[in-house]
Length: 291
Image (cartoon, rainbow, N blue to C red; front, side, top):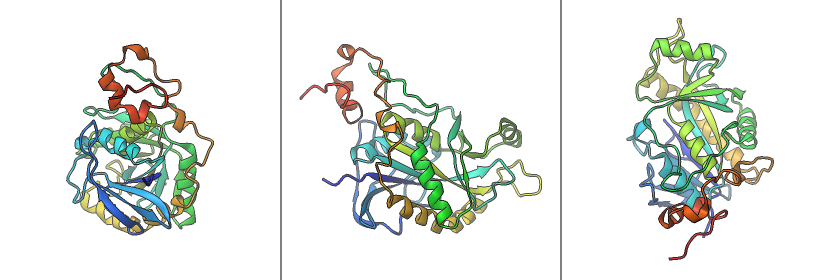
C-alpha cells in the first residue's frame, strides 16, 4: 500500500491542489471521529501526497469545530511523515504586509474550547514543545517561498486565537505588545498533535491583513481576506511543489522520536482498549495486545 509521506493541509482559500495527480479520495474513520473531509490522495511530480481541506470543501467548519485529532490521526494512518500547513493569518507587524509569507517557529495559545492531545484514558505522555515546529521543514518552506518569488519572513510567533470572531482592537494591540508576529485560528492544535504523532510539521502562514491594530488600514474583513488569498493561491501551490521535491527524511530533527522519552505511564497499567486505539502512534514503544 502506498505511503503518502507528505501531507498538505489547505486552509482558507486553498481547498484543492491543482498540481496533484489524483489517485482517489479516501474517507478515513479514526478512533477520534471523522476528519474534516475525505483525504485527496495522489502524486505531485511522482511524489506521493495526501491533501486535506482543513475546513472541508465549501468551508463548512469553524476553527473550533475542527476535529484536529481525527485530521492528524488520519495523516498518521496514511503514512505521512511531514505536514505542510497552509494558513491565512493577520499581521501584527508593519513590515509583514498582505501577500507576504511568514514561516513561524513559535506559537502562543489563546484558545479555550479545544482538545489537543491524543493521550488520556489511562495513558499519559509529555512531549516537548519548546520548539513546536520542525526546523528542517520550516527551512524548506522558507527556501521554497523565496525560490518561488514570494516575500518570506523566517521565524516568528503565531498567536492562535479561538475565533470565529476576529480580534478586538484591545486584544490586537496587546498581542503586538507581546511581540507576536501573526495571528490565526488553527495551527497550534495541529502542531501539538503532529508532535505527539511524531510527524514533522510547519506552517506557511500567508498574510492577508493587518488585523485591526493598524490605524491607516481598514479593519480585517472576510472579503479582504479572500481577495488576498486568491492572489496567494498560485504561490502556495508552487511552494508545495518545490518542498515535495525535497527529501522527506531531511534529517537533523527530533520530531520523529518525540515520544521516546515522553511516555510516563507504567505500561502494565494502560487499558488494552487505549493501547489498541493509539497503536499507530505508540506501537513502536509499547507492546500492543493482539485481538
